Amino acid sequence: MYRAIWRVKHNHTIYEPGETITGLSADAAKELLQLKAIEAIAVSPHESLDEMGAFKATLCAMKRPELLSYAKNVGVEVDLKMKNAEICELIFEDAQKNGVDIEGLDDHSLVFFAEKLGYRFDERPERQQVIEMIDARLGHE
Image 1 (cartoon, one colour):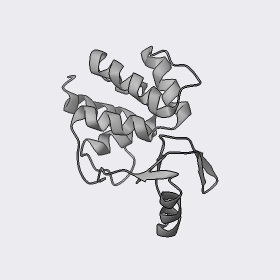
Image 2: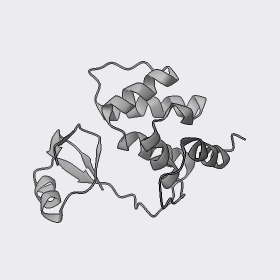
Image 3: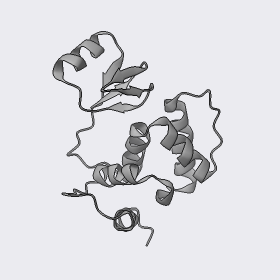
């Protein structure tokens, strides 16, 4: 996996700085790395993280609209001029103080978060099922 350093267009999708890019061919990744437009992310998708590490990885993988929506849901004020990485940091700092509001995450981010916590899915589970799994792991029950 890679993280955009600069704005990158790949497969008709624009990735803003800080967003995670997946599905790059080896040649495309090599070219973008040489241009310093992306950086490699060291986290293995088969490696489970601690709860806050998994949440941070989830934030970093979220696209800007999802980040802004989540920030609004949890009451974190952001300036629209901020970069995604700065928004991630604000949300992460809030989560460290106030806890993670998993209900505020969109479906894709919920599944991503669960996978970072070590859960594996053969097919996409129901939203409530994922929330319950994450709740159990975070000790909310």
